[in-house]
Image 1 (cartoon, rainbow, N blue to C red):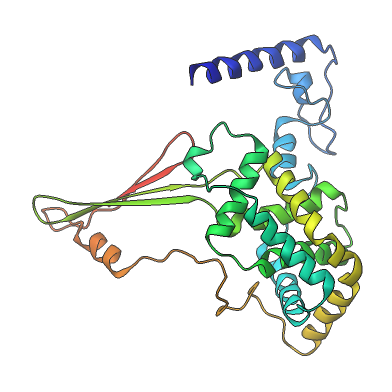
Image 2 (tube, rainbow, N blue to C red):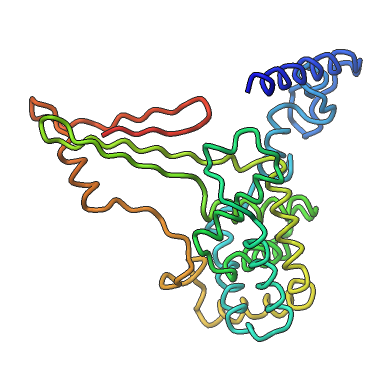
Length: 299
């Protein structure tokens, strides 16, 4: 562990030294209207095009100029793509794509908890994300529909960013969020009979090269369906909307392999109710956020 720390420290010093030696002068960020200096000019990095804020925006969204599409914008496209896939599961290209998603699941290796991913390479983090989807038994049609939905919304957007990187990152952000994080829970009975509950929630960061790797994986398995059937799927979506069948959900609520949102069980609710101070006042949950983003809740 100390060796890793020393390696990161040496790398940080090396980057700072190279940034100072670049001699690029004072250059402003390439984003129109941004008054900040580039990272290289500010001496905080090697990027000679963008400031720190727009560089991080690029890492999170796939473009320094454009943000991500919202769920409300994407869900009608995801639902139309999902319904089309369901209706055309006998198509050669659809079968091939679904098999490709299952191949990503099978080749992902052992699941890695979110709080154990520190220090892993981006490629290994991407495999861990596919392993989470596999262990949660997420329907491959949901994953395939994400890529098709991104293709469709970019096709309809007159101001879309049409770079391959943006498309991959947009699809990967959705897939990465379907089953995100590790969640642990401990219950301890106190001497007065009350139940003390501690919960730990850790979410991996949705940014950087891990999204690029996941996007490349998804593009590889879905590109033939998009090449051969995208116009057909777009017409299918238009017909659904004309018939008044546009849905706000990305997939049917009754679907077996859909993402499951954690809801508090009756026992958890009772534990929260029992967390009452001696003076009769209810205790508010104590939420702590660790430096690595881990959320610890005590109630």
